[in-house]
Amino acid sequence: MDSDHLPTFALTDLVVLVTGANRGIGEGLAEALAAAGAIVAVTARSADDANRVASSIRSAGGSASGHALDVTNNDSITAAVDDVVAQHGRLDVLVANAGLGANHPAEDVTEADWDEIMDVNAKGLFFTAQAAGRVMLEQGSGRIVAISSQASLVGIRDHAVYCASKGAVNQLVRVLALEWGGRGVTVNAVAPTFIYTPGTAERLDDPAYRQGVVDRIPMGDVGTIADVAGAVIYLSSQAGAMVNGAVLPVDGGWTAQ
Image (tube, rainbow, N blue to C red; front, side, top):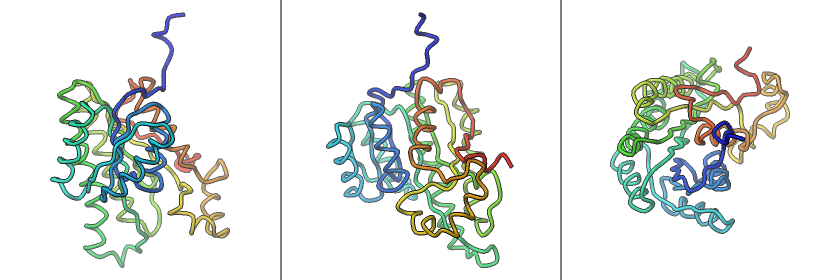
């Protein structure tokens, strides 16, 4: 059998930087990527938080390092990317997970609300991708996977700023894919639905709230971190080599309606 026709989802020895990897989806993605064979550069605003997760991954038999990275600070982004490359010799994948969300009726949104979410979700995503992309373009290869949201594809009440910020993520992904795809760097996004995490548990453990969410998901349940990780691993692996400029919903069919 010709192995060239067989896809591989292995990430063996690929250096993968994950932003916002100190909790929730980001922490789970870091663990899943390490389990798939990656050398994971765990990043968070606090070096202590990043090192805690990296240490846990190493204790489980994976490879990981911890680095401070604040996506709202360009100097911090550059320093973290430089540190990862200096320590590991290259950067193969960026998983741009860091993000903020908040509920605001549109008439109550303040300028500070707008700036806080946009600075992380849109501006932070772009400049992190730019810093990683420069390294990858020089290498001639790389993958960037942004964590978007189903809220980038449909409107959700009381989430005007969040929806706008994640819509910006999708458009940035498309433009970067056009500019960099022919130079060996693919850029894609994963758009999850409501995912059960320690951070969402308070709301999703409320039966009435959870039922209101589940009623919108044709598959009849919320997602898990493993659901998101499967899509991220696919887009990071050789199996996803021809995918570029895509926004992949992991939403149980929410956006099919």
